[in-house]
Length: 96
Length: 134
Image 1 (cartoon, rainbow over the protein chains, first blue to last red):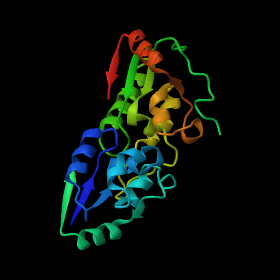
Image 2: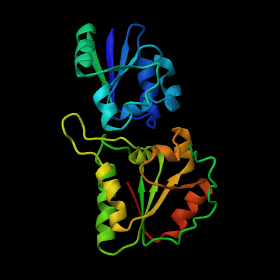
Image 3: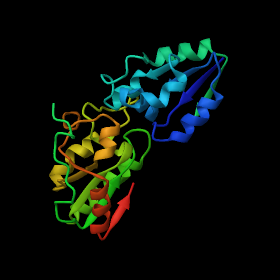
């Protein structure tokens, strides 16, 4: 039960592929920094392997002008939500 | 809403080539690449060079409306984009493919850009004596 942290835009296809291989049945994915662009409806294909188990960080959405553009399928969490996710998962793994 | 597909895509680069082509391929905030490219553009323009900017890939996100400073007050690049006009940098091209893949229309962007199809992007590179890629 891992929390995966990803900070690359969907343009970096390989990191999404490798994360997809490593993603377990009870795992969760949190999109931060440039990975926020994956939360747009136009990028939905990149997140297909993680469907229903993806969150995105509100602060990083806001700085990029994406707050109103997030796909409804993705949960938006703030820094406190990020903290809660780290508490509810055994470990964190960073992908970059 | 104006979408880029409504606009006529130029098959050739209509504006005469500039002295320097700067290609911006990275999105704001995540790295320094975009800032470095914009800095070079503004410096070159301050020294009287005519600068053309080409936004490719995630670089088109540099133009998105509604950007702000980071949660810890990190400066974004949107103030530099807003300054381009003051430095007489008004030749802005963007890859039509990059815009379409990201579902972006003219209404989503801070500044008007000329969308270029693949052929025109190649021509853009061919016509400029100097190109810097960021």
